[in-house]
Length: 486
Image 1 (tube, helix red, strand yellow):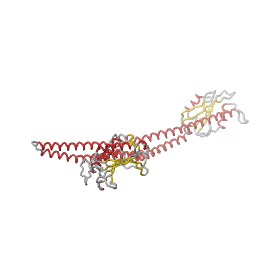
Image 2 (tube, helix red, strand yellow):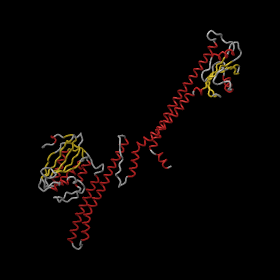
Image 3 (cartoon, helix red, strand yellow):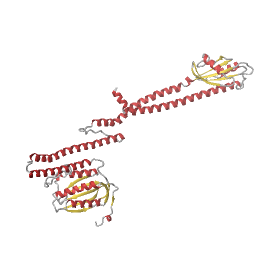
Image 4 (tube, one colour):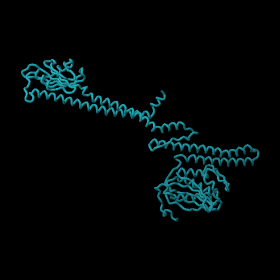
């Protein structure tokens, strides 16, 4: 019962029920309309034949073609019974002075055997005019006409009654309607079966969505739903799979971040704890040294926590605040800040891109200065460091490149691919301390802009680290005149 209740509440059943209801209403309306039209047509044909009967009796009353008009009611009705042959499903009756007296020798049904109908006809007869009517008789539903008969010089009164069996006349269209009803019912069954199968196929991805969503847990984000076709359900499936991909990346990032944070924080905590456990509180010099060491480690942890918080924000939709930025002016600004960051190096401008691009100037400045700070750390004092921006066109796609190049020892070739990973440090030949999150923040900011960060060792030594950002087709260039002196 529970499964039946669940099936009746399902979208598949509701969709199918709605389809069948609409189809049933449409078929019923079409069949009923056709039946009523055909029925009215049959009734109209019967009335036309009854009218022709009246005209035929008038012809007999006038004497026919060269004949002599009847002189008595009995003679008229006898002549009519002989000359007017009953049609298919028709019977006639002659009534004289309130009694059924005459009927044809061969009819499909007898009117005079139905006393109730005869009494009704006698009661409804009008000497002044023709009477039409419909009655339920022993032989079924009858459509009849009562034609008064009066002959001058004869005191008798008579009536000529002609009646059609409506049930027999309508039997053909009734049978056709019954056949239509069976065909329509069969069609509804076929529509139901096909609809149940098709709706099941169409809604299968949605059921898989529900089952996959219910089975998703923190440790199970691997399941995906196969998506085929280009309809709305397939697009929904792809959107759901993309959402799962984002969730999995987010969970993986958080898990990796927690693992890395726990590893990175364990070292300063262990250092501080070890010094505190061995601290001789009665030795002022040792207390001061331990205090300085603890403050230094706490400052390092505070910086680490700030970097981690920034990395966590990069996945939020509101992380970036894009606005039109003139790249050449931004390049000048970053160069000026880099010179203040490390006066011991020779900072030079290697080129500027004279374009206006939609980006977050604060985040890009932060990432660019991080590249500059790394270059200053890893290159000897007094060496040159270049900063530049340029627009590249590759395969019809335009990218904005923001780069920094130093003249230091460069990056080992086997480490170029992972220096942007979290807590990655290049140790060989450098020996510079840090949290290892600087370049990962640069990479996260580039990713948020739809770009990437990369590094290479150019000819001539040193390292060149850059941020490549895709730019839109509507990016517009700034005339060189806007930058005097270049």
